[in-house]
Image 1 (cartoon, rainbow, N blue to C red):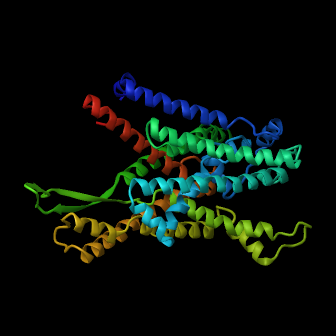
Image 2: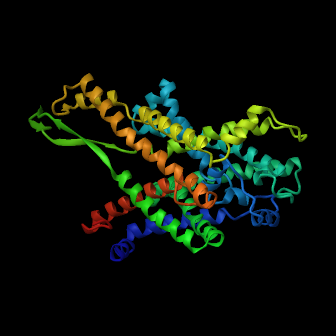
Length: 437
């Protein structure tokens, strides 16, 4: 492995791409610690030292920003607005025929969809920046556990400058991610998310060690190794549906007559269902928060019920609802990203067929049957992996610092595997030997 890495850096073109990618990642991490204008950096550090943390949906934002949200830095919003915009644009293909037509146009249509995603990212960044600034002003960003002001001067000019800066930070992150995709190695956006998550590991493991001791710390490391191995196994698993292409004459040449397969992954939805389920479960607690009386009087019964059962992650009802929502969103997302009828039509157009299955509608029905069967273990796997940090809260009280679970481990393994495969492919083009054996 070390010799393969050395070979990668000895290849001029690949070395240039790797160094460019590392440079962008370094700038991205530096931006996570540069305070936004108008923010008192000393007060922010004081709040962090008290152990005040945000909760709910903004735990995801803080995770994907590499801790920049709680630092209230210029990159506080991280890549989350882009992720949300990408998901929205994908979902709009189902309800807006124009978006589906653009998706089917090829490179030109994809460029238009990418432009729409950029515009929506900036709009969502502006909205999220306004929300974060409002939370920082009121102290809710740290759950009202810190009394010192995060933004001492809350004049209109300072607030507007802060909102513009955070939005511009999102645009800069999006641009850097696209630069890595174009001139570096791997998918730029995914690598920036990967970097943000990995950056939180040392502090998370250190907090577990100092709070729980060596026994729990070594237990967490063991659970992490087993979890990573299982995630790699499932992420690499796929059902290969065999496809044959009949021979046909094109001019004087005979084309076709080849055997291939359609790879249907066990986890086709990736981490999207976990993000959907977490966002939806945050809405009841947000609604309850807005309906809690500020004068100290007793809140309504439904608010008390939500606070008791749907706010704390260690309650069995919360875990059950979370698990079922992940299963539902897995089936939902797979249904809109993989269209058996479209695949069947493309196969029929080029003379392909599944052995033993007639072309056309029977092929679409067979693919739908296989897809529904393979999605079930994928959905159960996603739900179980997402519950790991919640179970850790119950067993060892390490939920806030438990790094090996949920979205973090899924993204880390997925991005890591994909990046290594790309480096390996480029090495094999030049040396006939890559990173993987």
